[in-house]
Image (cartoon, rainbow, N blue to C red; front, top):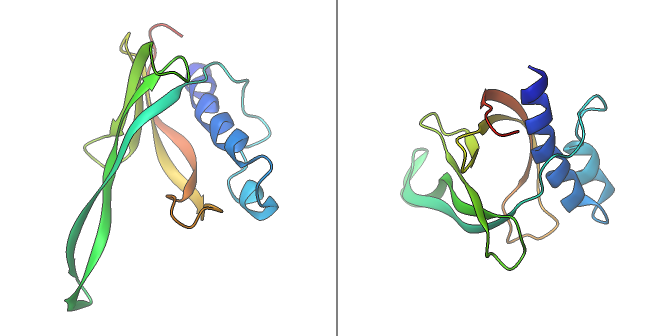
Length: 136
């Protein structure tokens, strides 16, 4: 359990770091719990957020975009030269971050806040639902 808290704290810390300097309400809405562990990994992602367009279940004359999941490579540096892992959705649609050594963590959305950028995806507060530790 301690390892999963440590790994997941990385993800929460990254989200909170992104929100520094942004709207205070957003920071509070997705703030990591005070008992979260220290940052153990900082990664850069390059990829996509995938959506599917389907008929609105409430009004089939209209269409809606539904999020299906992320697909990104994770890098150790901002120049995207050293590949260290990947980010994707699990079969039950939870976000997963997987290291090249096979370590992984999966989260479940606890809360979300709209990004200050209206064109960006919502920012999330997640809790750990699955882990597999090897190299951490």
